[in-house]
Image (cartoon, rainbow over the protein chains, first blue to last red):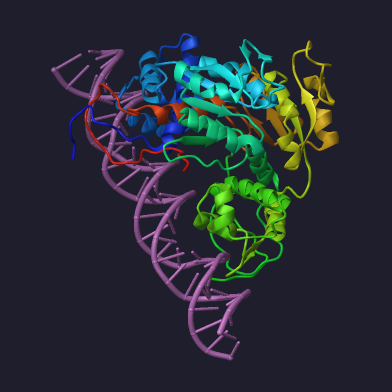
Length: 235
Length: 235
DNA sequence: AGGGGTTTGTGAAGAATTGCACAAAGTCTG
DNA sequence: CAGACTTTGTGCAATTCTTCACAAACCCCT
């Protein structure tokens, strides 16, 4: 079944969500002067099992040396390439409430290859305010911004009620990837990628895990079933 | 295989992460005066397929009426009970930088059954400042706070370098559930639950999806494989 | 050059999750 | 009250993800 090299590879979704963590762990190692690392060490730093790390990396091709480990610089470059962070991605943030302002000031984006080049809000009383080094722009500025600055990713930090409207504006302006913090389902064309970060949901899951009788339902009818219990426990 | 009612149920991890979304969708419906809903409608509001919604709800027991749908109030109560949000969960936030302050001000927590009762920071120049209605406390206040206020959930909004230290303090004080925004793996006892929200990771995944040649590796040897490609695409 | 020790890469097994198809159970109409 | 219609709940199949087990590949030492 082996075919030509340079073949296009499909990377499993679950793997893709972990690659950024490996990348950051590698950057951390590099900043401490480490030049080589084993899968055991890197896995420990990233918080996964070494076998999963190796399986994940195998989707990018073989870049380790058996008996030795991985070259930090080389693997970093490979991960950055696979993730597409060999370039800087300009990002626009829509919604300048508390969360939007914090995200605009969040230094983590910059160090990971993302540059917040514009912040916007639909509220005219907020437009014109300064947020860090940026001035809050009106939503009408979006189409031109997307074109001129090459913005491909939008971050949504609006209220839930304003989320769909802001989404439509982003999509109309040509943005095809949206990270939303609004706890609502967004309707977008199939070509647009959406990822949602839901802060309250995360707390809910933790609350569930802390429930002594998690999942017990007081009044109901039969049918017992087997299944799992644990959710996101770290050790 | 049917056993007694009132049996303890194990809820799959994947289901648990969706239950809060259903709960919020239901609350939204209720706020608009809707009293009944079908699985199709609720699934659309939550952004999942109706068959998945029904499968998820089946783990809580049967609470719908065939041919009719679900009673919004009853299902809301069942979900709230399963998730353990029939009570208010006091929460402490550690790390009062930009993100910490935004989280402290985030109204979404309050409406979902969580109450930020304390904010802390290890930096003495920040301790004593006011954040909303709270005063920033020193880390030394943690043990007493946890005991007196019954804090079971800690939110970590520190810098990556301070995350483990803050984690240790939370664990030592008796907190057994931590939501962290620091992009590092935390070491905790096995009894402690950790969930991580990684903002840069989410952007990375989006960047990957926008890569036209996502996942293609330039120089490597053979072995092609079948697999999936898509990651978190919404439609 | 050969042998021992180490660590990667990966088939294959196992577990978990999702999606399908349909019976079961209810409402509504005539 | 029978039959048409609707919508839930679920066994089963398909897919995806994780873990195991081990051969392959490399270094180092003698």
